[in-house]
Length: 241
Image (tube, one colour):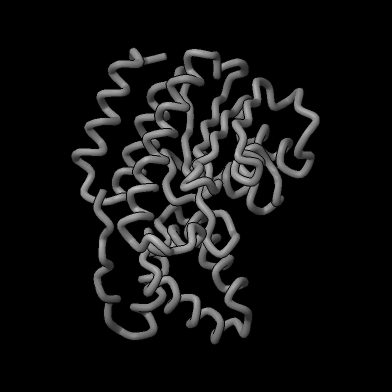
């Protein structure tokens, strides 16, 4: 570990105070989490939008790529953590017997072990925080406790956002609020017309473009809207924490 637990806890407290909005908090959080474990770890936060998972924040391209492998295969530790509301620890991915469609591709990307922790908001599993390492046996008990503390901070921030946006809002709409639903919906409508496809297929195209370009979903959506309308989309309304 590169930092003592109290040092990392102080950083997390600072993030909650200093981050101007939820997106910024999550982006800073995944970098702190990735830096807190040795050897090098990638970190990502997955949430669901209309039942479909996507990465709302990643520490580097590897985290986004490995997350996307699981989304495409519809299996993996991240999805199991989110669906089962359980911590999924993988000490050695090469020796795993689960996830045949995901495991060999993740190994090929250099993943040897992982830790996925559910984000449970008001009694429902909304997403997961995922840590990926290039060595086996990285996630010892002290490291897991530290990682679970980070996941708890992430859960607290998401819970506050849910309550700020609208108390009665469905939890699977949180991701839509975080990444500017109006711009994304406009882009989905444009893709539906261009590709003659359903809204679900259009969103999947948008999500893949976001992951492939390593850019935020709302940025890719904004480019699509601007290209068609000739003007940039209206600024989004941030949700402060």
